[in-house]
Amino acid sequence: MNLTTALAALFLIPAVVWGINRKVFSSKLNNVSIAAISSVLLYIFILLSAAYVEQNLDAELAALDTNGDGIFSGSEITPKQEEVMHRVTADTGRNFAPYTGALFSLIYSSFGVQIGKNSAPELRQSCSSCNVNASS
Image 1 (cartoon, rainbow, N blue to C red):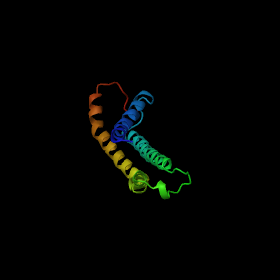
Image 2 (tube, rainbow, N blue to C red):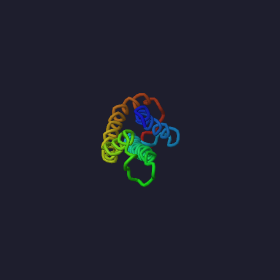
Image 3 (cartoon, rainbow, N blue to C red):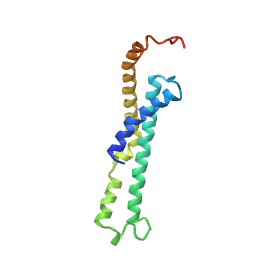
């Protein structure tokens, strides 16, 4: 998982949710709902990304276990094995992903709501000539 993929998800998730709202739901969801759905999807993306990285590191470490007993001993301990072991054990970000992901998703959602609130008056003004019943 690289930074480009993470940033693409960060910006594409709300765009896709907004597009689905326009095409499928005929813009029935409000900005708060769109931000909440985007936030939940981003949280799921963060958790899946952490699990993916964990799986890759574990597979890389298992490939270095030549006798397959799950314990590194003697000739199995090499500089490459030590490097991979360090990456597996020293990555606290992956371990705290459920907590930091939840916090980040809440902050992300609140920014989405604020952006939606700030753009809503402009949208109403631009559609003041539309023949739309305000009560529907």
